Amino acid sequence: MSTSSRKLDHIRICLNQKVETTGRPFEDIVLLHRAMPEIDEVDIDTSCYFLGKKIAAPLMICAMTGGHPATKEINLRLGQAASETGIAIGVGSQRAALEDRTLEETFSVVRDAAPDVPVIGNIGAVQLKRSGPEILETLAGMIDADAVAIHLNFLQESIQPEGDRDGAGVLDAIKSAAKGPVPIIVKETGAGISAEVAHDLVSAGVKMIDVSGTGGLSWAGVEAFRAAETEDGNLEEMGRLMEFWGIPTPASIVECRSAGAYVISSGGVRSGLDVAKAITLGATLCGIALPLLKPAMKGENELKRTVTDFCDELRVAMFLSGARNPEELGERRPYITGRTQQMMMK
Ligand SMILES: Cc1cc2nc3c(=O)[nH]c(=O)nc-3n(C[C@H](O)[C@H](O)[C@H](O)COP(=O)(O)O)c2cc1C
Image 1: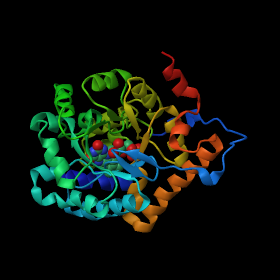
Image 2: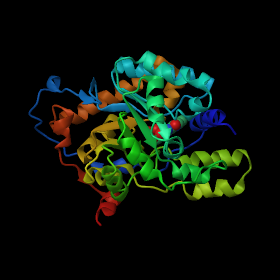
Image 3: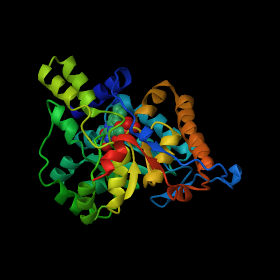
């Protein structure tokens, strides 16, 4: 199956099946209520800088799509929503456009719609290893990107019939990429990043890590549904078995922060309250993917409302935490309970 048509399979399954893991790791995090916030709510400023550009809130639309003609409209809407709400946006893997240049516009439509916000390109780590670090300039040029995300998705590759499981030499490829002119973000895709891997990445010159931990979209789950459709019982079973594999997002934030990385939190961020929790744990920015897919299919207004809801909820959490801005929120002390607390006791 081609890279391009696989993209449509993934979107269809994400829209129609239950592809989120059960359990919400952010419920283990409780923000400390400030009975006396000692700030005027109107003085709260959620804005911050990312990749040298001012954004209205510490939020990013995570890498999702592009790479099939039918995805152009979705990326257009996502780009418009990012532009109008003033948040950052990533595109899905640009691999399909490297294979077929006519697909470039399914990605570049994002930059056309969002000329002023940070736009992030995307490529798989294995593809980077095969193509060499120069490919990052091609990818960034395609969409006038401010940075390119290199994704790690070995869980998904392990369940795909066409999966590429050659994980050897990825760190070296990332090390070479980090020396180049294009800023990079290394991101997982729903299975999280440990302190050990974060240390390796930081030592290789990587500054920004998107943890993309468990608690949200499960690629093992998506691939299990795909396997069921092709009646591949073995892979379906494997996908179901591995559905909960990975590091929950809150724990992954703390692990990557301890390695000294600039941390982006994605994977199961489902409200502005989760954004606030992620920031108190050490994230500087939060990414949202799956919660925006259905609204993107419904239309521009629905999509903008969803993003605005996240911003409004973050603002209330900041007020009740007594934080005027994201930096002050990052100084607040959260309670860490349950499984997340147990995982952190090493
Ligand atoms: C339909 C869909 C396609 C995705 N494609 C990509 C991709 O091409 N590259 C990537 O790095 N991540 C991709 N992701 C993963 C997201 O960027 C994100 O890391 C993950 O979905 C966890 O966030 P969530 O729980 O909010 O969905 C995709 C997610 C979805 C829902």
